[in-house]
Length: 108
Image 1 (cartoon, rainbow, N blue to C red):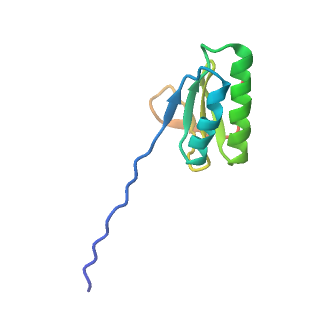
Image 2: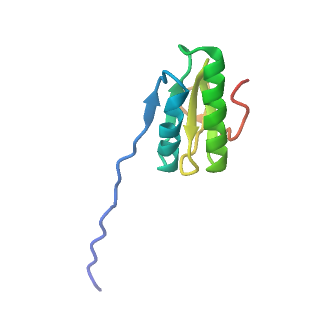
């Protein structure tokens, strides 16, 4: 028998959390998605037309990258690249997940 050493490879996982001040920040956010980093974006304090443009731009980029979008709270969203699964639907009994929602309409 041979002795073999198996080393675990770990990598730091980065998550971008942002409250954008304007549409001009979108290309940098898409770069994060392209780098396989999910984004949590808070659009609560930005003018509604600009918030909609940012959401639409990031939604298109996320779709093009085979990712998904999930609403977290009113005007707060997670944009995730395809390497990140978003699971939603925590039940009332604890921290177990009831179901997985992918590609659902985040504006509901």
